Length: 120
Image 1 (tube, helix red, strand yellow):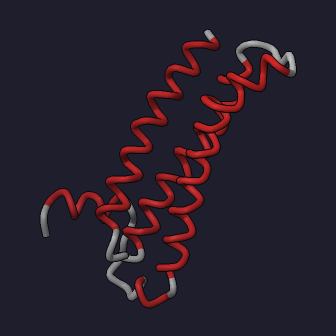
Image 2 (cartoon, one colour):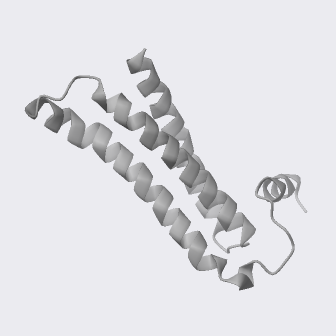
């Protein structure tokens, strides 16, 4: 087995049992949808709703990062869980889903660092 695949399988704690036959495919899809939904909510709040709505309702400046940080942490957790679940179930889309989630994770980490920088 290729070294990177072996490392990814070890990280995801994938065993050679019949995980794919245990109905994890739907659970994998559900986890992926949840992780993308959380990331989308975070971006929508931070970059669409708060910049325009906050001044109208006289919300304190700097509330965006205070809202964005906890949501980003949940989104990071959800994306990692999605990757792990897809690998555990040996889902046929595990590589594309892992790449998609990894891209979202990179963007979330960048946004998290920017949010933390705004609070400091």
